[in-house]
Amino acid sequence: MSGEGKKGYKKLLGIILICLLVALAAAFVICLIIANTGYSGGDYTIPELDLSVKPDSISEQYDYLYNLSVVDDTADYMAHPDSVLLKNGNILTMYPKGHGKGAVLTKISEDGGVSWTKSVENTPESWENSLETPTVYRLKFTDGKTDDKLIMISANPKWPGMSTNGGFNCSVSTDEGVSWTEFECFYDNNSENPVIPIVAMASLTQLKENGHFVDKWMGLFHDGDFYNYKTILTFDENGNPHWSTPEKYMSDFREIEAKAKMCEVECIRSDGGKGDELCLIARSNSKKMNSLITFSTDEGKTWTEPREVPAALNGERHKADWTSDGRLFITFRSIERGQRAKKANGFKLFNTKKWASEGWVAWVGTYDDLKQGNEGQYRIKLAHIYKDGQTAPEYSANADTGYCGNVVLPDGTIVTSTYGKFSPDALTSDGKYKTYICSKRINLNDTDYLASLA
Image: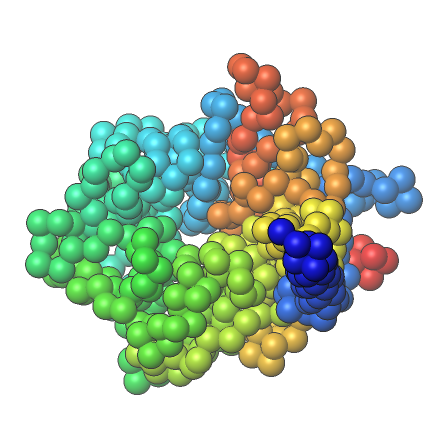
């Protein structure tokens, strides 16, 4: 190569190198801009009450808020509880012995969630082969002659390395949880309309006709492609359950549904559970968007275009309950996508993880806050869920938590139960942090006061 050719070659290499450096610098600036302009999801601005560690300045009367009651810690991994309040005042909690799949286990509290000492006796054999987190609901009939029923649903999703017949199983109790029917499967691969549900039923809501409640309940679930379905539960004259053919209810907004990977919806009826509007809050499994919210004024036949919730409500597997003073207490697995999450992860160029979790949290606010897109009144970090290696509570927590069982007692006390790694001292046989189930009692009069100090 001639001298002039070599010079030209070096000049070309220099230009290419400069272009690469400029491109990298531009990419870095763009990342910084995105990180500082809310594209990442934003941070919440309402107060958060941290109940993971009690400050020395807080009076002893609030000790109970910082205490956890162990529901079950008899295995290395227990998860996904759901709860129902029994007529005698006891709380029944159900959960799988494992992550989703695993035998359905039970615990009963006879003292308002302070302790958990009993289990349901003689549970059905079919519960041993449950493949999904159980969800349990109370059904109140309007015909004036049918007593309440309890119903537990467990889906048959497709697990890696396992085959499935699909569909979902139902077990019913007519004696306040003392005895249960064996699983009956609906819409499996042998039916004309098979489905392979995940978290069925994520919510189950009694419906109205002509402004009055009727003996019909709308159940919601999703599948592995993040299509969301509804099916209507009724009972025949012999008391046998029937579910209508599952149908997709977000088809008009499939682009949003698919982008968010919308799933695990919670359904809230307005006006303390007696109103004429329904509100859905959905998990955004893609984490490219915040959780979604949508409304219906025709009993779930049509829905408004889903929109993102404020950062204060962003999370997964929301469970909502009306409190005695007309507010909403909503638990969920925290998902944070703002600056605090970036800081917790340590900002790095091309960092693929753009979210963090505060673990097990609750939101306190009004239905109007949901409707208007407000942040709400305050959040509660209910307890710290430890990441491996953590020895004390931090901002960033283990996200393997949530799926709460919540009940509201007659005196207004909320009892919420979840799963997680609650202590660095609770270890499995191989020295890892144990995942187990705990509950906490909350009185909003007390948390209102403490939140005002936050």
